[in-house]
Length: 336
Image (cartoon, rainbow, N blue to C red; front, side, top):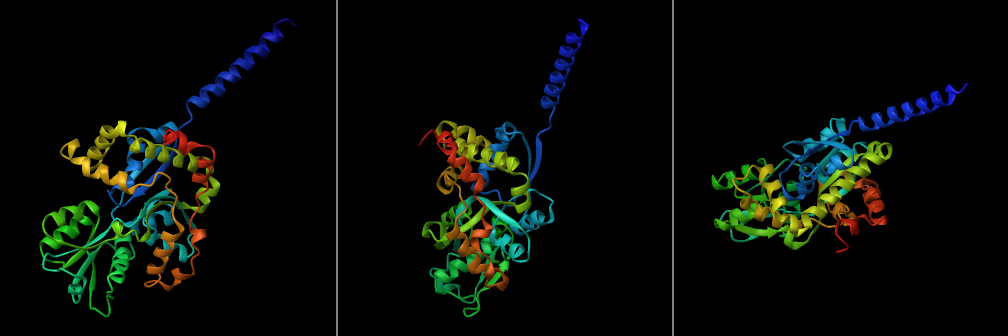
């Protein structure tokens, strides 16, 4: 009879030990995340990965580079990835077609594109009858081209402007230099390079501050509702990466992440990229209603079904709102 308590205690200890061992061996949640550009707005994802912030929140995040925002959006719809860093312009057609996709964090809340033309083209009217290069139709650079032309008083059909799919920035730069294009939509680093060579910047959409949701983190609605803890932890890690990027004490470390990711010759070569990230990232990265409305307006010109979309149903910022309500932003930025 005396041995019974000892047996009970030993059994309890064994149970506690087993549960502790099980907790220690629990595997991190695997998430596959696709990005389509090596632009500064994706820097928080790279920092979260390199500085093991995803690991901190129990996540095993696999970042996959895929050329073209349209392809990334299609991968999300097909369930090949759980989260996409994608252009909303590429998401709208899928959502209008019945896909249940929402944006939960705004990585780039204004267009980073500029309309850059050959040195011989000095004003907007000179683009009439010319060739303009973008990436894929329906993507962010294409929609930015439509915005730019309307802003400049141009109409592609009326003014016989041919829009061509010519790949990402490096391909567009090469096409300009080889005179295969008369103008192209270029992001900010490529714009700086070409303007330095004498090419003409006809319109900088970033400086014009035209409301435009350029890039966002998106997921299927059933991921947002069915795996809220995982999604919130992912968002927490990304926001913490924002805090790391904006902390000037970590400038060198952030530049090292940039240099490693982009395979630059030296860390010093990452300076312009780093400065562009500081300028372009929002400390509270909520997707914007007004910017998303702009996307819908221009995509609907190509796909009328998109016109019926309701912006409020395309955005779910509940994870960000929860983090803000608990003071996480203040914690990350040190109250600044």
